[in-house]
Each structure stands twice: as C-alpha cells, then as structure tokens.
Length: 166
Image 1 (cartoon, rainbow, N blue to C red):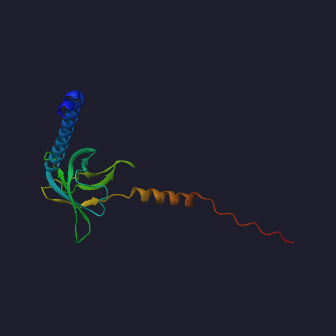
Image 2: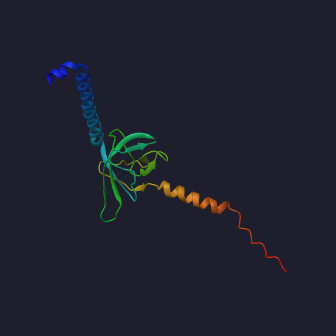
Image 3: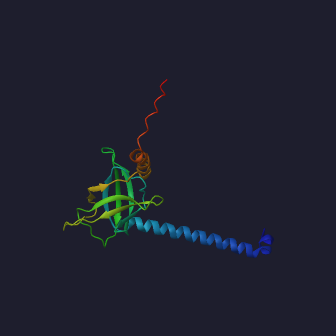
C-alpha cells in the first residue's frame, strides 16, 4: 500500500485536501447554526398552523433577519403550535407586536414576519406574542381561485334547441 501511495502522491494529496475541506465545512456549518440558535432573547408565539416553520427558520422585521426559530412544540390543550424564537438582543419589540408566518413566494421557503406595534412597554425574555397569523395554504388558495374563476366568468349554458315540429 505504501508503494501505491508513493506512485500516486498527487492523488493522495488531493484526497487529503478534499477531506480537510469537508471537515472544515462541517465544523463551520455546525458552529454557525448553533451560534444562531443561542444568541438573543426568547419570545414565544402560538400559531394555529405552523407549516414550513422549523428550528433555524428566519425571524424578520421589515424583511431584515432579526432572529431564528429555536424550538417548536404542540400545545396538548389547545393543539396550537408553540414556537420559541430567539430575537437579537439589540432589538426591543413592543408588547403589541404581531407575528405572521409568511412565504417568500410560491417556490420560496417560509419565515416569521414580526410587525412591531406602538406600545411603549417592551417584550421581555420569555414573553408571548398574542397577535399571530398562521401559515396560508398556498396550494389550496390557488386551487380555489382556479375553481372559482371558471364559474364567475362563464356564460350561461344555452338552452337546447327545440325539436322540429311535424
């Protein structure tokens, strides 16, 4: 085997380089995701439908990322999705902030959009956002538009022609 490596030194070095780059990428990606999930203060929100939301999903205010989803679970009493978000420590949100699950488009992923309210009191770590809107079923919405568009614009069916009289 050593003689084979001596004959193929270039291939062995390229293989070692590929493995080193792969290990570096895994360490970098792990460090990046775990740092995102720990930074910031926790805020809770309950949604009737949290389709497309998983730990690591972006939290945005006016389209700017301000945090990530750190945890989600099902409330056994209300059957709502309880989402824990980590919001950037530098961002202070009013207590009347609203949260909505929004899609980036038909083919895009989902994120949680926060809309700050006007109250002077701010959310504290562990507080809950009560004004929420769950995910919209885009495929169902598209299907209903397609099904309803034909019935609204269609001309009424013509009456059958009368049979000729003898």
